Image 1: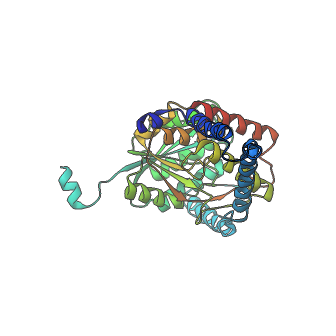
Image 2: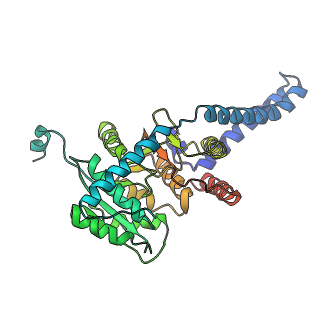
Length: 96
Length: 246
């Protein structure tokens, strides 16, 4: 069973998940454990939550975005060092 | 024979570093110098795949071959710009290493990270080690807020849809076991950075062991906006393609 799931194309995996969740939703509608009006709105709640989660992840990621300004300086040093060595060995590297 | 090697220490592996170039006259010399600087005790070869650069890139490479040896620097040029994917395939044909590193020639990928790629692979026996800019220890310099926003948004979308198993999907600083690269590249058809995404997603689907190391990325294309509307459309099309075919 697990092997079958592993070999499925990714989109098939996602569709199976969607079908599974939809069937639960339909069962909930039929069984009426939760009042019908709430159950009908569940998909909308889900989509909105997914959207909020996505925006949250983007926001957090943006705030935590790793930057490295010192790397630019280090790179300049490396370039200078390289140019020195190369011109000492007869290779002229001139910037345009 | 194998026991002899094992009792002496580690088995010595050879690394082929494939660098596709187009008009990288200045950068290729610097990158070669830095690779030799940071890989002192490593058996490696550099394969420069130049697509007929008009700026004299190949002349500089030939000078570098005189300096460092023609067995360490291979120039495998092509007549004209033929694309990244085919450049890797072309380079692969001439690679004699056990492992293949792919990296950019414009110094956004710094050779000082090569030892950490190698170390990670030896420690974990991973098939693929990919550099990630988005974790602690990694980072990006030279991106404005808009660029960071689109990058982050693109990443979240791709993570949600594709479950790729890596944090940096579009990165192109990677180390592959030669057999793994040959296998994955044969099934990839996209172009540009979607190609890089396709490579890593297909590798994940095929069950390859993938590890990540943090890298820093200094974007040297200052001022030009590389992310227009058409780029975003291309990206979304690529995502849908990967969603449906992997």
